[in-house]
Image (cartoon, rainbow, N blue to C red):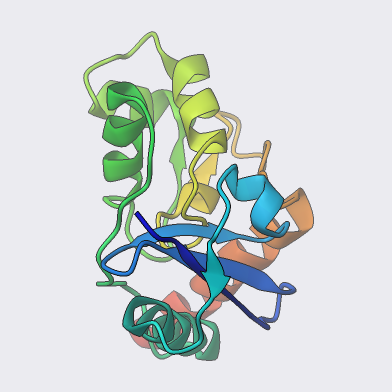
Length: 164
C-alpha cells in the first residue's frame, strides 16, 4: 500500500501529515520519523491530505471543533480502544488517564492508557492532548508540554467564546 506525505505550518510548528490515499494514517509534530512509518512520496494532490490540511487550518482558526477525515491509525486492539475513547473527549474538555481507563472498562489500567495515548499516531485529530493527570496537571505529551498547553488553552478559549 502506498503512503503519501505532506507538511503544513501551524501555530504550534510544522505538522507532517501521512495518508494511505484513502485515510489519514498520521499527524506528527516531530517530523515523519515520529510516525514510525515512511511515505512513498510527497503528495500535495492527495485528497485525504488536502482535506486534513483544510480541517486543521479551520481548527487553528477557531472555526472547527470536530474532525471528520477518515482515520487509519495502526496499533494494537487496546491502543485502538484508547484512541477511539480519546475521540469521545469533547472539544475544550479534559479527562484524566484514570477516568479514561474507567471509561473503557479497565479502571486499573491508567498507565497502559497513558502508554497507548503516547503512541497515538494521529495527534490533534485524535485528541490525546486532552488527557491530563489526576491532579489536573499537564503530564506527558509526545509533541511537548508547551504544545499541549497551547492546544488546551486554544480549545478553552474557543469553547468559552461559543458559550458566551
